[in-house]
Image (cartoon, rainbow, N blue to C red; front, side, top):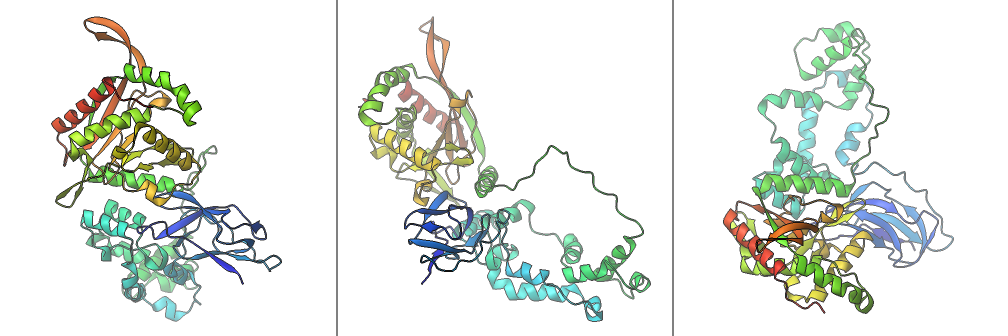
Length: 468
């Protein structure tokens, strides 16, 4: 008996996933727990292991297709069992919803079609799917609540009319339709069957003189005139250009950044810190870390240690805003942005304040490695209360990052560079770094942000903790 492979639920707020890659093809053997396919959600990319050993007999969902959780995506059978051809890979994030299938179905042309009005069809479709369109994930409902959006006004493009995060963000960006736009919408929603019939009218004279104006005859008149006044061909694109669809991760990053810019009142403050003592300590211990602990000693845990002290001194920086309430987080969960070849992800070191220096270094190294190999679980990219990002290794002095919602602050670490600075009225060569804090001015005032940064700076410049 064939074993069904389903799209797993990666978390409570995840309602669908996109298959980005199949590691096995139809007819190939697969072992239990062997990576079978790769999925991408709006939270994380990860590999899904095979639930059973056997032969991949059928792939029901091709690469690039997005389906709801618990959908059967493949079948695994016994050796020698008949196989089915694999479906063709589709464009990223394309889902065939029931509405699309219904409108695309061919309709035999006839006088009844020509005389019908599009409005009753649209109204009927809306009535039948009204309840379906309200289907949404907790994430979508939270975004709608934050922006005061009635989900009944949002058209869902997900499976069975489910409202996706892309739908709610697009609605917020464009705003609700105005009354003036109603005629245009009505004309654009005419059934494709009517448009196909009118594109080649058999009686142009009759179509050109409708008894009463209506959306359908207007379309007929325009269609009838098209052969006489052909539209100039659009200019061709530059030959050396290439168009590719955004990956699920890239779309998620774009949406998350735009939501953050619309949500938080972004303000930035930049400090400079002398980290010569930290550089000296790292140089003295990095060989021992490599031989005794088997990991690379980086600068990240030094900065995390200083940040933890700052968050304890100024807990408002470790808070969030929910409606009209301020939520002070008891846990300190620090997200660390990791650059990937295909995007960016922010794994979280949970309860960072409870870990030793060595524990922080191990946690960061482990999360970064598993992020690059797509082995992170959903829990490991959620629940952050503060985030750090480090563009410094690529040569940047500092960057002003965008806040990672629903947090209220993020710290950008610049590159560490030796520079001549004034120390005790003399010039000395010191290792210096710029620290750029972006904070939400709805909650954090400039004075508080600077006090937090001064605390972080003090801890970095006066490092005393033993690291082994």
